[in-house]
Length: 318
Image 1 (cartoon, rainbow, N blue to C red):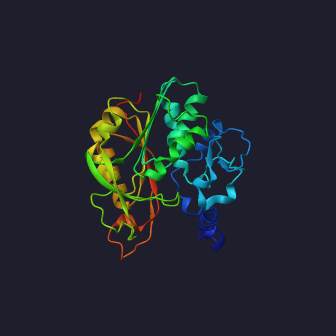
Image 2 (cartoon, rainbow, N blue to C red):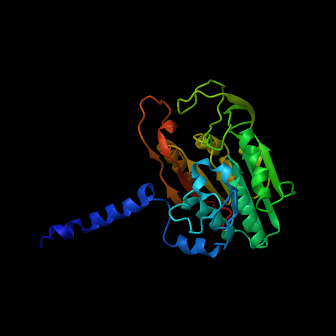
Image 3 (cartoon, helix red, strand yellow):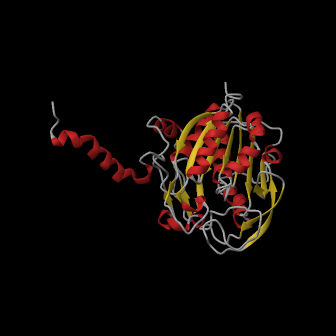
């Protein structure tokens, strides 16, 4: 029996309508069941002038988000499906909350590498306090002096003492090996896509003319040390494969879960091969979106929207 034209188009029309609503998040690395997980941690919050408050009740200075000043003194109460309408995707919230629930009841240890102003460090510290955890440790590593100086401010505005013994802030770049790298100078929260590199040439991977600061570089072995981490959140703008492949032994030994911000299709494939080959389990994945730009020789420079991968380590997960 031949289907009527309307029947033939039903599925296609449904897909087209869904994509109008979800746009680039149509295949966004989240599952419908994630809504229930997010809802369990939703916090009723009051609006605060000069701040943007998310569904977890985490406050961030509106000045950290100059592209979203309409959210000043607002509470974004909706759970973040497909994203939080501000800065992060559902996959990042899933990795955070799934890692929290997968950790031992009294424990939560999280490292944020390429931390910017430390949003995930802060969120994890707040969640650990709310769930009564006492065996805790939070580490944030950021290469930009400007952004690094915002981390204590963000922690303090959420009643987390940045000088507490379980908080460690490191000014530097994550790298494949110890040494010195060059990081673009940052003068505004809008400049949040810098990549550390081996020389101080004045053109970056996007073809922009920029000045660079000299920064200390630390491999994962130095950063993660001998502890066991419930979650590593890493967003290092195109050098993720170099860093993670060089440190795969420490990741296998010391990390239960890792969220990786990805910045090209090439890197996504490299990471899939790396972690799958090491026996890790891919929990969630969101592909990058890119537009081919012939004038940019680095494929990372083609990326218009970052992707993400969330992996779990069966060596350390029961």
